[in-house]
Image (cartoon, rainbow, N blue to C red; front, side, top):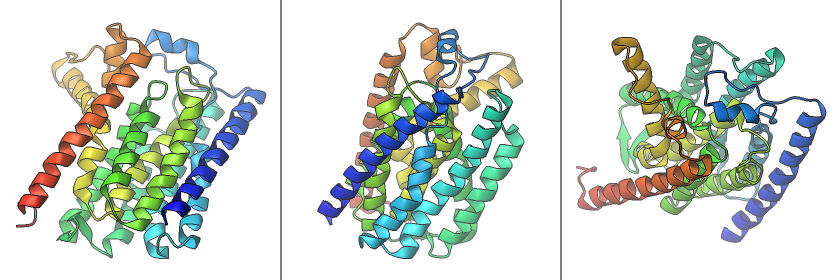
Length: 322
């Protein structure tokens, strides 16, 4: 089984690197590049014109990944479907947003409420499907569906937006997703989850091949939505909703700083950070982009390790099962 996963991973990595190169060339030939937000850091103005929505490659490869995992005997049809249908649906929402931006030559696509409505609709549809088999806090501990389903919808929508706001520096979101997928691969023993994490990892690293500083392509909403949804679906597939805490560590911090900034500005008329999300704050105070990315990824890995150790201690002590 491990040899099958390794072979599939290498094939998907090579294919994704090649397809991403083609996508970058296609975008450049048509003169299609990102429009940088006017209210972002000044240094980001030089990134204007960089090809966007590079997550389209992972979006196209996702159904192929699901089919490959099933036919390689690495997971049952229902399990594989439950893991991959959510990233595809979420990626579709992001793709609509990206296409609107490209059509308007603007940094704004869907209106905030429009995007939120689509996110809730997609998340609710997927949660209904997975709740038929039960929603587990940890393996062996099923949560009441009436309480767990709304909570999972909320966490799923939060995950899509958390990866989205983290995608603000070259290689940051992709590197953080890579660390999260590695942690999934190391933590769980469920074959469909392992195989899906492996192929998701292959596609993410292939994207990083082109997205590392200076980025040749940006993830776009199609990518941030897809990878955010994949992290959630892998945790649910591993039957451990609690595993979202370590997997989403740095993404949660980024989303929280954005929420805190919005609240304090509107309620108190004051800023807590020079700019949000948090990585932009460090940019404004003078830290270089590669340094921020490296330190955030290290912090993410450390946060995952600490939370996992804490979770394992509680599990071994039986506190989470009593």
